Picture (cartoon, rainbow, N blue to C red):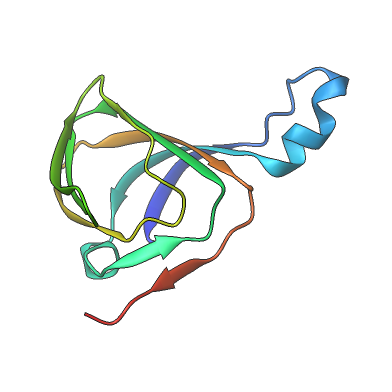
Length: 111
């Protein structure tokens, strides 16, 4: 993983009927990333991804959308498998990320 997971919640507090959802979903609190890894164009083989900025800011590039600056309190739901990279972020960045499925591949692309 390119980012430092500050907390990875297994969602064990969910009621029993949510068992299948629990196995399929990852909810992570992420801190600063390794710039050498996240600055490369890549995509995640996921069905759904939501990113919410809890603290600081992050500047991304998304294919077809260009550069985006997300600040504290903002949320993004990138399209599944969208090609993207992290351009920059604040030293104190904290992101909340929800991903389906919980286990997924990150595919790095040639520049």
